[in-house]
Image (cartoon, rainbow, N blue to C red):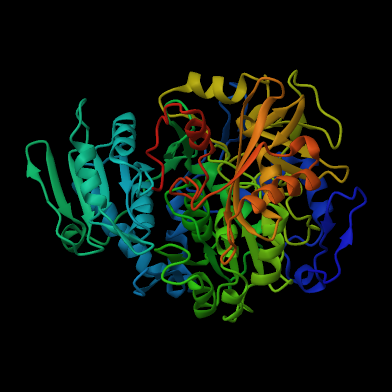
Length: 638
């Protein structure tokens, strides 16, 4: 990137231009020309991308939009995502290339080639077959961050079963609800997991989940031995527990990959919304393969010598798309780490980057801000010169965290791919590629062929610099096809508020340069005296103060203003809390955003309530502040 960023014409932010070195290496050297061609012929763009993958039978129709919003892509095509992720590499040099480099929290290392991965996936596919799993059956996976999690996912896909991964750390109630909703017959888990110095009793949680009314449909539980701690193994009428290693020792390493229709289900993944029953989003083999393969290839400019580290968990959509499927389809080498980012020391991540020569690091703003809190001295202890690209995912990244990430981790040379997307979208929707000039805090522009538009409450487009609801006008190959078992809810949730458009549930604005700025969830937008403020905007102002590491903002009812703003902050290491500092932070927000945005109160706290994926539970803060019931807290970390 340029060492001398320039002001944008809109004075919206600083603009960072891509360096000559970045441009020279990029797959997409002229973003505008590629975008224009894709806009002119979107179906042709996706047909050409699909042709880069392997198909058992080519498609008859690229897009069937006759039954909106239930779009179909590559209709008539026959494929299997595992064929593209693993099988086709077995006849190339990639058979001996590393697919995964894994490090446990205890320092254990594992290295797995594409050839070894092929064998392990085939073995476990036969294990599942031996347990009676057939095409279309659902298998729930509830594991720690071990390589066996991707192996289990791939084994399901290989035989045409539908995997439902539940993040290893959800409560037994959350797990039970998802098992019953999906009607899964097999549950795959671990004896336990190591996270941030703690032992998570995964098997015990599973045992509680399976003792339920109504009864769980699970008949077989497969347990991978990770920690070696004693667990209870059940073997009774209606339920049989098995050790992973014992079943694998008896299985055959030869297993044919099931030929699947392009629109056949690949997986379901539950979103844990703040209210209501979690939604099981369903993705399919064909379109999801093409979309994730392409977005990964172009956004991260993936090259054969890269070592890519997505620091998310495979249990979330980020992990599905960009730890498991897209990297493998592109023949990439991925790094996986089992534990927490700051255990046993705040430099754990940076030691991993240096040790394994990570070239691309993709993580969440929450993690970045958490590591910022420990200061720049920790990354400075390690050689991070292997990095060439950085990435951000999960929520809007505030400019202060963006700049810290860029300067202290990327050495002011690594472009940051700030990606906006959702479980529902399957892959990146608004994102730069390495040659796109960057503005800290903006996801820049929509990916090729994606038609985004910001509208007001009536559905009318808002002018540049105006705020509104983010919608998508067209379909794309990676989109979720429905909510599993509830198509009416899918239509109502995503397509009814603005007919003919996909409603993202996010608010956003677009600047005069066509760059998009995600404000936050619509239910995270505060209206104060008639003015709209995104919680992310005020949180960004708080975090821009040198004393603040993390912040969360909520709105509480106010009889005059509509909402009063309340802020909760974690301080950086070494900063002492005081009433004077709290008042200083209120005034800081007033200076940064405007007097009307001045919080009614700023409270300095020791911790913030977060989900196990690292997202702050603002809903919980709001409930606690008003003395209301806390509702479902199964996703709460502590």
